[in-house]
Image (cartoon, rainbow over the protein chains, first blue to last red):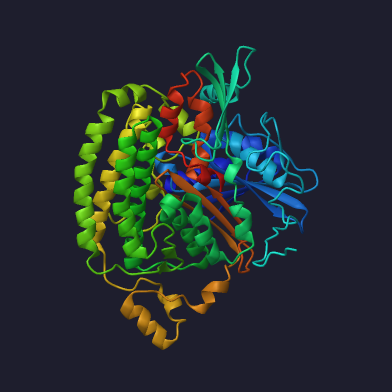
Length: 159
Length: 403
């Protein structure tokens, strides 16, 4: 259903803006600097990728970075068989990114989740509140690698 | 396109309101809200804004999956949407197969399609039943839940478990088709076809139900696409998109089926669309039963690892004994993305592996999490009585959004 031409067109349009596009099996992957994120997102919106399938994040403690991964999706027939992946690395001790809710409104809740789970602040998102964790949660953001899940044994100590 | 974005923004972020606004807390232990809390702000009985608070059963599945061997993520994540458990995990299995570079044999692909469609019907019946009870239409609730048993029974015969099937595994499926399954499935299809006519008479064409649903909670085509809505809620707004068409998985490219769409985008269209989808699923089931090819149900690559005697047993009984390697199977370093269509909509997986037996990061975005934004978007401006009607029509499943 997806002509290779449309996938090729999306790739070329991104390359024209000066982004290096990697071809992977189901995604076109673009690695970006935080300053370029908005430009790439607006270009994708123009190309018909009008919503996000996911905003996620990966912690890379060895590099001291947190990588935020956006997957943009399109419902148009030629573009539905692949996703465009935008990846941005931000420093682990002070992670900041511009919010993309102006471009992709459904980032509203997903950014809120990444903020809570990885501690990345999205500047311009007016709604950064706890979403999944209890309001009195303390400790490091749980999806960072230095957060250990403590599991109880089968035998519970009791006196 | 940006003007849509402006509309979206103003409606999604309208929150507080003046002194006349009354704040109402619904749930989290409410018969119709499940374990979900809503903070509803009302002006008289007109809804000003709704803030869905979704975190009550958060089970940290993304984090837990990082601490377990990759195969153990399948029974874990299945519990997100226990009413639709095969469709939840088939995306994960696809992502793992992409990383491992293994393809399931044709018979396994057809069997996956079979269980996926049985699950989809059961999931839609659940949605219709819950929507019924939200309108105080308890007959619809009891009928739909009773008829769900028919499909659960079929799923149990096929997989050995009523709800937690863990049927797809990387490289194939766990069990072969049991004796006489086709006859019973055809009987179930005949029964359900007749029942759908009765559903229409008692529920969908019921003047009271229609007046609660028609023109309520209208989602326009452009808005549905901009908000990234998935599943029947999207297709009821006229967008012809289905992950079964977009992503190549199971045997969907080899059976013919329609993707039904409706233009109205209101609560009534969403309910009617589920009925249409049940009909399509039944047609797929009949096709699969006719066309399912003979052959192995588990990839040769893994069958080779079994000792000869066990291998013989697997091939003759059609019940897979997993090779010992499976428990500590190393995922090759790399990344894979997979999407699959559940009863509620599209589920998205992003699996990152660093070459060890445990996934480095497993990102999952469930259809209910993508649809939860509709509570904020659709409700403002409606009367409070419309709240349960819209909620029911969205077929929202709280534990799935929580993960």
